[in-house]
Image 1 (cartoon, each protein chain N blue to C red):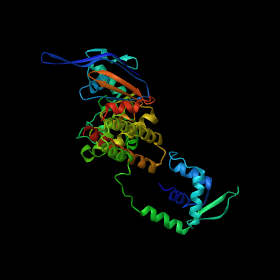
Image 2: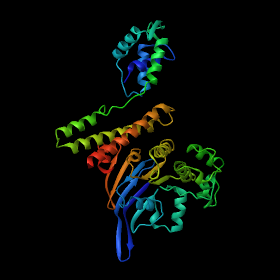
Image 3: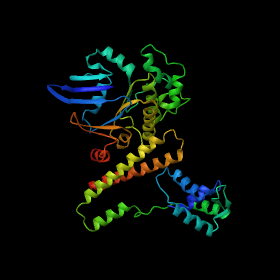
Image 4: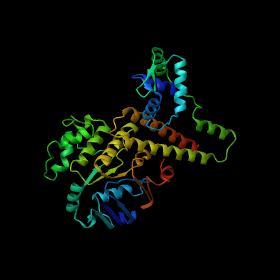
Length: 237
Length: 165
């Protein structure tokens, strides 16, 4: 589904070149729930942005279902993102002047499409916000806004859901609700999920954990590995 | 933990025979606490002796049936209403930590590390169990798991605190 090869990303600050990703090889299978963990500045969010086609790498390739998105124009990457990728951010990124309904269908409108009849209602029901169509984001709690963001990310039935610290702004109970929701979509709809997180409790939901450090993958562990807990205890507070 | 009161709770709605009580108990705790048959029958004997259950007869397969009495219901309600205090030293690791400091134990950091690892295993196990139970409709068990995860979160924070102290 996702195949990343020799991925590098550098940023230029004045005369200095700062390498953020230093050659990453990484893959995600269809239906997998992968967590990316690592200290701040280790490159995990950069990788997520590159996977989502929000940025381009300095070198290397990213294949989504066999298509190398790094060789595509920005317009093409946007089209691929709107078709295949759902994005969830830590700060929800809902548009404050639009209703919940309008926020959810916004990615479709950008493509000149309409939501299939009943689709928004079905998603709102799935995220436990049935009847909230006409409300505005500021009328909702942080946890509820993140649930709207999940519905928005899924409106076009993407093959991959990319989540960047989706519980970073939420307390334990709200975090748990959001993670349960993602786990439900993963289990019931076989949704492929790649999630960046600092939270050990969030990482516990994943099939596989990938540790980033200084721009490279330092270690990987799957749920079946006996060292899963030892791995988490070493790297997460 | 009170096996006695859980048996009274299982008998609250209907009469059951001993084996049914054993399986009912194990179902209630999602198989995480196996109960041996001997313990069930010993507890039932005591409950009968104390007039908290009675044995009105046998089922079609000639298995002895147990029924809760009015005194049994009152005992159950009293137990449910009785608040549960928290003793500082009931947590075995707290006590181990106390003793380790008493003897200036050199490997205190490894003790803390091992304890944290065990707790993370518990977190992973409970998270996995919670994922498995999604859609099962067993809201009570899900709430218990949430409670246990909140306790584990606090305990892990405390371990990080004492590791740095």
